[in-house]
Image (tube, rainbow, N blue to C red; front, side, top):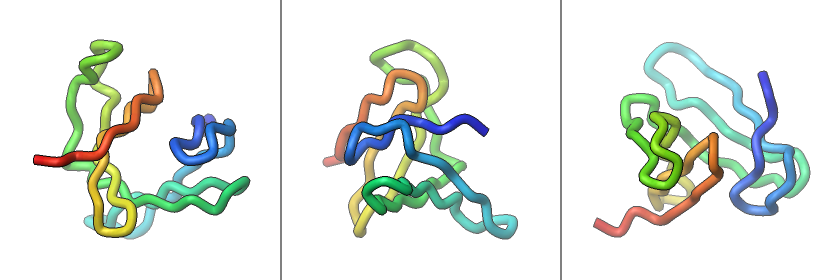
Length: 78
């Protein structure tokens, strides 16, 4: 699995680990200790790079859209 750019510290140190079935995937950064939980049922086409690589991440009770291809990261306010 390839490491991604961390949305928090911008280093290429963001990785994931899956748990049991129906449990969220855990994303973590080994450089800054940033941690997020992915809801794999919520995925969409990224408006920035036009690929279906944008997923929903939960961080401290807030939800974000994060694209693993272009690394766009935005708070969901709706």
